[in-house]
Image (tube, rainbow, N blue to C red):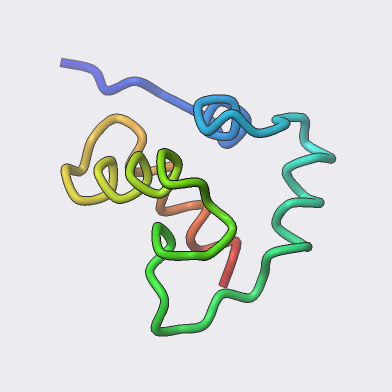
Length: 76
């Protein structure tokens, strides 16, 4: 079974956020760095639905988990 191959733009679209490369870079520049002890899904800039999605995908190691990990690293 092959896993879906999502990219960061698709993750941002899934989260209902602007998803062009420039918009993603601006989002990351605006919101980084996250405190080392804060989980990505607990960051205050997410809506409740976005936060739930990020937490569930990461916890369940679901299709989006690699991109959630990448976003987490980029925000550190």
